[in-house]
Image (cartoon, rainbow, N blue to C red):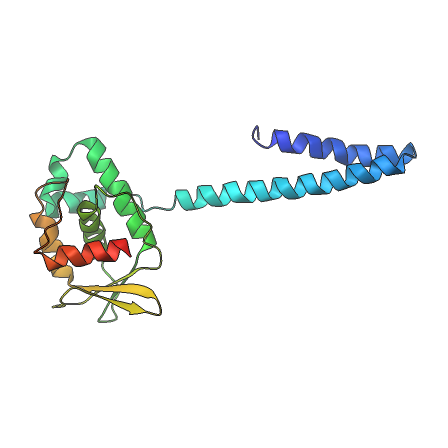
Length: 196
C-alpha cells in the first residue's frame, strides 16, 4: 500500500476537490483539476500495470521439489559436488528454461518430467558462464535414436534430440565451468539452439 500512496493521495484530493470547486462556482479551476485527475489516474494505472507485468515475468520459473533434486542426485554426479551457491544458480537457470521452453515427444506421448529436467540442466551447465538469454518460443522434441538437429517451424526453432543421449551426457559431466568442445557436434548444436 505504501508504494501506491504517492499516486492515490493526489488522485483522492483532486477527486474531492472537483465537486468542492464546482460548489464554490470556480468552474475553470474545477475543469483544470478534472483534467489533471484524469491524466494522473491514467499515468498511475500504466505505471502499476508495467510494474505488475515486470514482476510476473521475472518470477516465472519452475521451482525444484525434493523429487527433482533426488533425480539430479542420482543421475547427475556433478550436482552432488556443487556448492550450495552454484547449485542454487544452476537450479534457477534450469527453472527458467523449464518455464520457457515447450517440450514434446515425437511419438505423440507426453514428455517425461525427467527428460525435460535433464535437458534443462544439461543446457544450463553448457551455457553456465554465458549471460541468461530467454528461451521463449523454443521447442524441444525428444525423439528416440535421433541425431541432434535444429529445424525451424514458422520461425520457431525446434530442437530434435534423443532423450537417452541427454541423460547420458548429463551423467558424464565433470565440471560446472564448461568450455565448448568444437569437435563435439552435440555441444555445438545445443549452444546454437541457446543462442538463437
